[in-house]
Length: 139
Image (cartoon, rainbow, N blue to C red; front, side, top):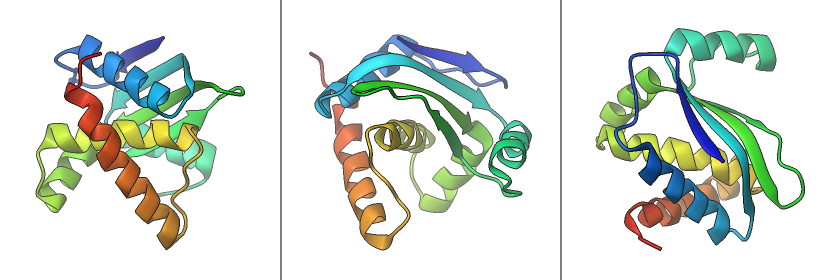
């Protein structure tokens, strides 16, 4: 089950479409959808988590906690909507497009993709683009 929680004034316009899309992404990687929570928050909220759990004192757009068991994807994905908005401006893309990129990024980590090396980042970016195309696909 995919659920959405809000710790700021932001909310998704159509949660069902996003949940169906994330489920398609997971199935396209031959995985099963377990319990996945998206928590949308602001920079301060995510910075507190970053300091407390990762010992990082930097702003970020996403922190994901992976609880995947075998082939079933489970996790909590925290997203700073402030950071997503800033990144959208920096990358000259629509805010909704940047939000989808960040949302799928967390899921791709749960599916086993990394982004530490240049080569891994390249694969991750290609996967993000591929999976974002599934957003409007009806099945």
